[in-house]
Every structure is written in C-alpha cells, then in structure tokens.
Length: 282
Image (tube, rainbow, N blue to C red; front, side):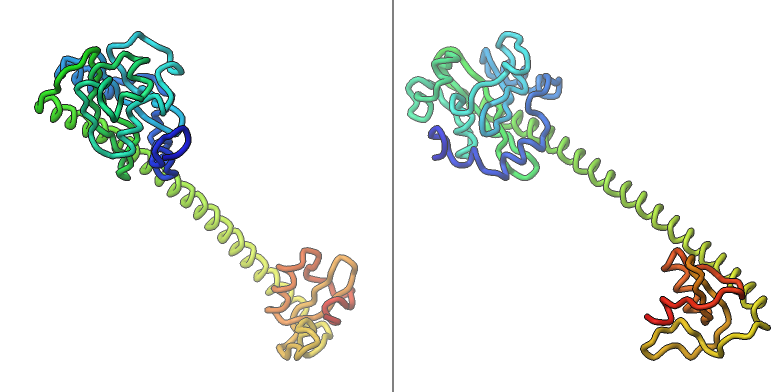
C-alpha cells in the first residue's frame, strides 16, 4: 500500500503515463462512452453507471448516467474514495452484492458518500495493458448480479478499452506522421543547402578557370604557396588569391578553392597584390 493506504499499482509511473496518454481526463462527455454506460444501466437494471479514468488523485467520470448533470470539474471523486482503486490493484472484476457488508468495499468512503448498495465493476485497459479505470454499475440497495449481467459488463468494458486503444493508436499514428513530416522538411532543407553549395562550387570553379586563363602569362611561383609549412604542396601554382588586408599568394586549384570556401575574406586576386602572409606562415 502507498499514500493514503492506496495500493502501489495506483501510483505506477507506467500506468499514470498510460492514463495521460488517453487524453480523457477532464474532458466533456462523449457518445462513444455514454452509449456504453446507458446500455450497462439498462441491462443490469442499476440506477447509475460509470466509465472512470483514474490517475493518482481522482477517479474521473468520463461517462456517468443516473447522476445529476455536473460540470467537468465535479464529475469525479478522490481516488481513495472510489472502489476503482481496487480494480487497479487486482486487475480483476469487483462484483459486490452488498457493498456495506463486503470486507473489500465497506470502508471505501464512496459506499456511504454515494449511497452504494451493490456495486459491479470491470477493469478498463489501455493498449499497453494498464488498468486506467473501470466500467461499473451501482445499485442503491443490496442485490444480486446475474451471470448474464456480469458477462455483459465484461463485454462493455472491453468495448470501452477498444475505444481507448483506438484513440491511443490514432494519436501514435499522428505523432509518427508529424515526425515523418519533420524529417521530410529537414531532408528538403538539406537538399536545398546541398544544391546551393553545388551551385556555389560550380560558380567558383568557373571563376577559377577564367582567373587561371587570365593569369597564365603573369610571372608567378612554380608551385602552390597555400599548402602550408609542413610538407607544402608541389602542385603547379595557377591562381592568385588575396585577402581583405591586401595580402596575396599563388595556389593550385584545390587549395585556392579550399581557402576561398573556408575564409570569407579571401578572393581571387588581381596581379597587383602581393603576399597572403597568414597562409604562407601557417
């Protein structure tokens, strides 16, 4: 048992996450569930019927018949006051002909608060198998529940579970679709960036060919000056580049492309500039 004498299963983090994932807490009545509670009351002859969703604080009445119309915030009772915490603890039906004499229920506050004579409830599950609440019927006086009535409650609880599982699956599918859309947008962005880089590289290559042709007759070093001090580069120097400080150097096409792409201040130079010392000394 945990807080307030409640079973530990009520506070299971996996179960609570499952409850939240249904999106049913604090929501308005819906016909999909109201049809089940109406049928449960009609088949069993009980005056009241509920579909509950139970977190660690309260038993929320997602659907209820036989009680006054209530605003959303009042369609609930505290979890320790509700017999539904027994469904969560046992994951089994709770069928009581006389709640006031039943050792399992007689000390549950709802028995007196709601005037429960007889109570019959069946667990409602999510798609992961967690008990998130129950489908239950309440009679004002002690009475028997027939086998047919109990089997019908099982069927209706399964229908409520199926409705919840369907909603969870739809939510999961929507989330997956959103992830796929995000990945598609990212792929489009990366493709556009790659195309832009390819266009820039092609433009740069064209400029370098023009520059190399224009500079072919200009006196220049025999090999690339941009290869660095360690080992250098012995490829033929073909193109002159400069930076915004006026330093320049001659390089091979590979190193010229590298320095122009990686250093924004470097550009293909005119023959009047001389140096590019920062690269000669690196």
